[in-house]
Length: 349
Ligand SMILES: [Zn+2]
Image (cartoon, rainbow, N blue to C red; front, top):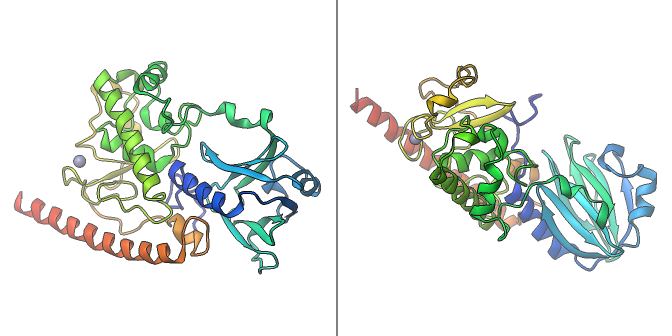
């Protein structure tokens, strides 16, 4: 496995709002009403809030009253006004299995339930974190608004973004600005809104703000409806994430990739123009663009689904089979699009 952090290189994408929402919904159906009776911690740092030997006692006796999501955290609401948070980070996975089911070496934490089942938190890279809080002591206050919350109106978005001057890509992935948006959906929303990732928030006109707001909500809502793109692969007919060198679905020119703030960023330099006032300071970053002229790298990052496997929550065996089928269809479709773009380029001289 490459020693990349997964955000600047070709590592697996980190689950974002739609993927985490999907896992939370599936988990809810499996553990609602169950009481936690104990815990086993095999990697101490997985538990953010307690010493590993104290965690089992702290969490035991609490009943699961609801499961939801805040930002990229799965939030398990427990009786006694307690809250358990699970941050999957890059490779975290959850399995709900019968007690005594075999445990592989990557299971970092087990929560034992009173219904004869266990929740296994499996995490190859060990970046995932679990926390146990009192409801009034959660770390949620640090997060910005939820983009799909009905209260998050265009007016609210305008108020928020007009206070900021940062460039759009780093701004959108800042969890204190908006909760739950990461690398994938920031790139997709900016492409859909035809806004350059290095454009400054201060340069946006009211119609730009409106497009960004609408596209951001649309790509997130569609991904939730598709059960999260990085769970069953990115299958939107129009999308640019990790498609460097493939033709832009809108104009056919090659998708470019550049690293902004240690994050891999995909965009179309034709559809997403950078206004001259934002070019100062962007030149050095843009010199790092790959590829220069549409050479498809023929290489993509590991998909979350490849790590998640068939038994992970959020993907039934049926869905896994369909995901494989869609991936095959997607490859064929993208290959055809690349061929058409090359043919156009050849005709155009
Ligand atoms: Zn384009």
